[in-house]
Image (cartoon, rainbow, N blue to C red; front, top):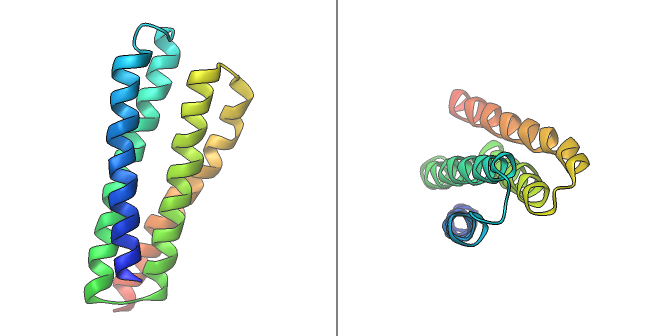
Length: 122
């Protein structure tokens, strides 16, 4: 599972670079300032949590754990739901999509809490 987590993290990190560059170059002149800031927030959290996912993958090499597997899954879901909803909101301007963003935030929090429990258990 460690290999899958690390590969997933690398994919999420590559996507964060591409999505961030797209925003900086293609959207800079097209989005209103508030929407561009929302987009940037999505990229920022995408990067942070993809790096966290990489950390979980590396830890799982040394201390395999179902809790770490669940932590990784929740961080990945958080990236898709939290950052993804912010990207869609920023590009489309459809504000109600922001209503699902907190679900991604809860997924991030749960992923980090499971990491704590995995470390405490070992």
